[in-house]
Length: 306
Image 1 (cartoon, rainbow, N blue to C red):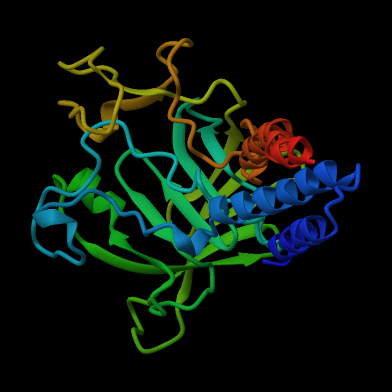
Image 2: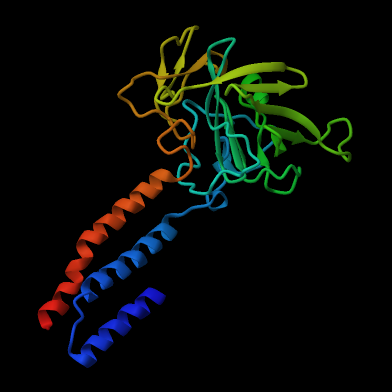
């Protein structure tokens, strides 16, 4: 509004004095460029909480929660890129574990992690667990409200609702769940994912133990899910809508074709913009550059009229 007011005042003054200062066209272009650039940047900015919550596919129009029904879980390639449009900076207390992670013992890709602001999303072959904000408070509506991955995998897609909170602590993302032995008591730490100084990640579970993960390098992210072994060996799904006939235990995230865009929506620090919104910034800069070339033409009629 301030820029527009300045432009109007300058034009009014030139009409009154019947004299156009030589610098006015360039000044008008500069002011209009600033106004257009700032408004475009604001219009395209999107914080983590502006993006709708994502959930694991489930029957009955995806309403949550559902219990004692089957049909939960990804039918094929899991969804990726939930936070691709997020331009908010990563919370300074959060360890940057964005991207795909490979189990160093099995050499298999097990999960995709997306992060933006205080939001944290963990996607595996069967589920997508979205935590809109890592508050560490179970049941505040800002944690994961989804379904149990093990029940989907081992119980034929059984929909078992879960409520879990996440919290950034030291160099870890810790997950807290209600204590099954003392529901009214404090929640217990269910799982930890801790970034190591060498860039690896340690996954810690009180029952399953500890697993070491290495990050999948940029440009090697998977773009398909393939059935490996069993009677459906070699069947491939390239998108979330393609249903795979094999059980989850036989599914493998893979890079099937280097010419195909991968499911690289990880807000990954190894990707094009590191998840910091710099690709949006480049688009805004290009738009601003276009306006810089075009806006002097706006002042041309005023030059001609004098």
